[in-house]
Amino acid sequence: MMHANLTLALELLPLQLWNTIYMVITSVVLAVLFGLPLGVILTITAKGHIKQHLVVYKILSACINIARSFPFAILLVALIPVTRWVIGTSLGTTAAIVPLTIAAVPFVARLIETSLQEVDRSILEAALVMGSDPWQIISKVLIPEALPSIIAAITLTAVNLIGYSAMAGLVGGGGLGQVAIQYGYHRFNSFIMLTTVILLIILVQLFQWLGDYVANSIAKKRGKSLHV
Amino acid sequence: MYKNVIFSICICVLVLTLSGCKQPDELKVAASAVPHAEMLEHIQPELKQAGIKLTIVVSDDYNMPNRALAEHAVDANFFQHANFLAEQIKQFHYPIESIAKIELEPMGLYSKKVRTIAELQAGAVIAVPNDPTNEARALLLLQQHGLLQLKDPKQALATILDIAQNPHQFKFVEVDTAMLARSLPDVDAAVVNTNYALQANLHPAQDALILEDQQSPYANVLVIRAGDSQRADIQALIKALTSDKMREFILQHYKGAVVPAF
Image (cartoon, rainbow over all chains, first blue to last red):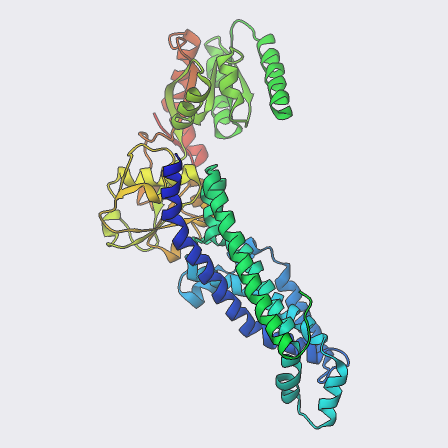
């Protein structure tokens, strides 16, 4: 029995571990690509900021709230036509990246907004006084100042996406989560369940450690310490 | 622990009540609500004419009816397929047996791209369910039509890892059961349960490339205690459940979601 489980684990886990890493990393990169600009827009259009525009702020904010309200399993099904249009199919690991990204974008946007809000107003005012235009303020002041906190936000997103990716099994996306559900839960195979969960724990620890390390080394360079 | 105790008490109460009210000319059959109890209701008048009072005990629990049958609380039950019955007998050693296949909710292979299985190209993508029973059931159907060969040709919990031969190099994708019909545009074919096929406006009899038939081990059976097969009332019950009239009722009433297996 033990031997059979080990064979099964070796047959399933390496490929599915890769599928999880592939899904999560691609979605995080894409989510930051789309989420960062949205976070910046949210920040600077808010009341009292450098480009205050309450209409834009409220519409964007409402859209983000709507997108974040969907339970992920429903989003996965609702986005099938979009996924099919983008990837050409709604099934498989690559197809699962579309709903994962779309679920993560509003989350990233909110986190980035929070990070940018924390940037000291006096630094912004100094930059304004010296005649910086908005683009310079964003690229030279806001983002660099908030970078350690942005890195922490991206780490948080990556860890969250590992959890979301467990549901990719619904659309044949594979990944460790699917193994845990299909073999561990449905088939009462505790060995597979345990091995998968241990792999997921290691993966989460690795992501978190890497994120903390990068955030801290940036903060250290500036002589500040970051509490994470 | 508490759950077990409560469960046992419930069973005892149920068994006592059921056996308590049993009259001599009464035939008690435990069944699931749909379609089994509906089919039994349909033959109630017919059996009444033959002097048999058919009482239907509706239960959507899957463990109670076999136990109630073994303990003489009912005379027959009608809710399960042969594979499930075999599993229950193995586990609980009930002295019960299947006496007739009655109906089947057939699983089928559907496609939006090809019309016959012969048109499936080498390397075609086929979606199958990802839960234990349905996945094995799907693979057994594909095996029956020569599309693949399983390591153990009768394994009731097979997965795509148990495929021994895949002569056409089909690529199998495991998908949630409810997602299969939705995934049809993305695959060459998908094995779909009848209830989901109907919801997706697929008609099993016309649209399926291959469909489970009466030989399927997933046909639902009438189960009685071993040794009761010659009882006159049981014989009358079997006769009524496998009559041409019943065949007509199934075909008209369930419109393909349920088909006769006799």
